[in-house]
Amino acid sequence: MSDIRGAPRPITIGMLWHSLNSGNLGVGALTAANIALAREAAIAEGLTPRFVVMAARDRGTAAMTVPDTEVFTIDRRAITGRSGFWRAVGGVDCVLDIGAGDSFAEIYGPRRFFFMMVTKAMTLTRGVPLLLAPQTIGPFTKPAYRLPAAAAMNRCVAVFARDETSRTVAAQMAPRTRVALSVDVAFVLPYDDRSAERGGAKLRIGVNASGLLFAEAESGRNRFSLSYDYAAFTRALLQRLSARDDVEIHLVPHATSNTNPGDDDGALADRLASEFPRAIRVPNFVDPSAAKSYISSLDLLIAARMHACIGAFSSGTPVVPVAYSRKFTGLFGLLEYEMMVPFTGIDVDGALARVQQAIDDRAALAAQMQRGMAKVEALLDVYRAELRQLFARAAKPAS
Image (cartoon, rainbow, N blue to C red):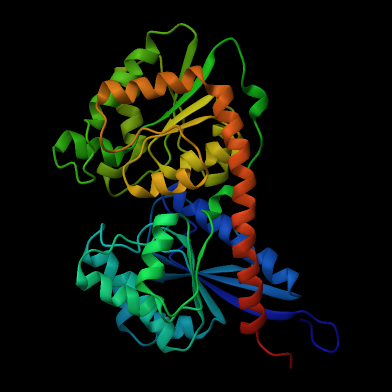
């Protein structure tokens, strides 16, 4: 894919609904990992990639530094002005849209869905090839969401789901496009391996308590329809762990917010550390790789943020995912990983029993994860192949 003089051809890749500075480290993990996969695919095709991260405004954390990457901020002004997103998307050769992982759905309400849809529509109207990177697709139960989502997917070059349920939803809604199964790209997020710190005199057990789920439980809203009280479960879990002399508790935040205290794991960790003084309050992480590196040092992680779970799974730390939507069951079911606290059909005592089982069965869980990671690589190879084909077609012709 070089010109007759052997010089690499350039390609500019739009990274839609990614983020370099989201307070939710899961979105950052998706961004860093997907850029790495895209860079690898472009270079394999003899191309020199440049990236434009197209992201909502976020004051969460300091921005990650990624070579050959610039940021275009999406807000209302960028959408309504022809010199905004319309011009920005016209300057790229193709777009990878990851939908912030799980935001291409109706569950977050009409405002977020509007931005998800209008950016897709503008990309397609400009004739820029659009690929939906591995993500959760749906749910879409209402026609006001389902019909425009289907129309957009039918015009994509390909749609990648990160679980079987999402693939089924996308295939039914968009029969005119290629729908394929892959897996969450954050499994390949780079990190520093700290596994040598495991196996000490005390079990290093991490608890990633979700500020969002805790606030929902305390308010009584229970937006995610959990069958048990998440706040009561979290406190009971920490009480049980605190009573054990063989356990060292680590409170591990994974999503923080400077603007929304109801969705801030760090603020909740501060509260819980004051209630349970034996717990170590882990400082907020500077980036997703730092979080994954720390998680790799733990003997077990109990986590309500999915990308904290993925960080554990892909670094060999046995993990208990605490689910709040079908994205958990879809992903970990795909990998045949059996340990989970489901969001329905269980009470606080049942959830605590699952955690105790995980503590006892850590070796078996590690073996399950090792088998699951082999499947991860095979599923990501499907996505890698599609990226190479897309980039080969979309790259600027040699001058």
